Amino acid sequence: MRTWIVAGNWKMNNTIAEAVALANAIKDGTASIKKGEVILAPPFTSLQSVSQTIKGSRVALAAQTMFYEDRGAFTGEVSPVMLKDIGCTHVLIGHSERRKYFHEKDADVNLKVKKALAAGLKPIMCVGETDEEREKNVTRAVVGRQVKEGLRGVDKIDNVVIAYEPVWAIGTGKVATPAQAQDVHAFIRAILREIYQDAAAGIRLLYGGSVTADNISELIAMEDIDGALVGGASLKADGFLGIIKNIAKQK
Ligand code: PEP
Image (tube, rainbow, N blue to C red; front, side, top):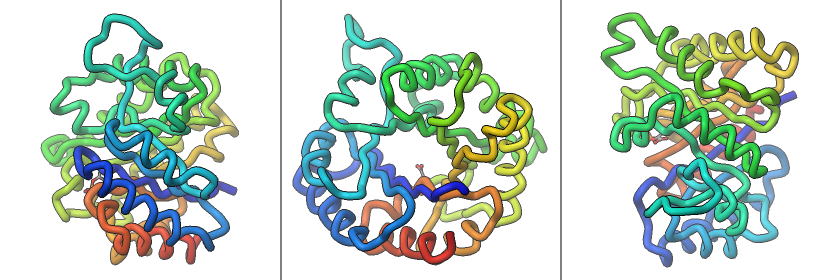
């Protein structure tokens, strides 16, 4: 039985005061929910304050990216050791905005996934095709490559979470249909089964892309969708809590 996950990716939003207020609201709003995992991914500048705010609660902390070395002359980067130190349990790896604006390739994603695992962090590895790739009918080729290359050399999959986020659905209001999302999730699980056999059944696969409290119920009803990675709708407590409550009702 897979427990659901809802992760909020705040991207480059919120001052420290705003981050603490939002984290407090999520902490209070989820206190009575017994199952599942709720994860917040604030920007680096708010990690410390949010970490203190959620201490002792059921809310966990993620970073939005990391570098694949522990320390050294890598100006501007943050290491997995530093993220653990500040209280992170998870880290987003290979978000499409990292791939697009910061030129992260599958090989970088792979190094980061392996380094995160070695440091005791759970990577949430993001994959997904662009609009153009979907139109060219190469969704499976692209997502299949991202999954296989991202996990190359990863022997133990238990601590990995995969987020399928079609790029055309991120921040656009154009959510994938439940059937489209399920199709790719089932495809990803089949790849995992080829590589990791029975362990694949326990891996959480999240959908991301314009998720709201209104559309999550249909998506989460799908067999291979185990939760959501949420951008825009995670910036308002009501919207994010609505998503969490609708998932908790069903799974
Ligand atoms: C994201 O950036 O991971 C995301 C899913 O964004 P949004 O929910 O805004 O589409």
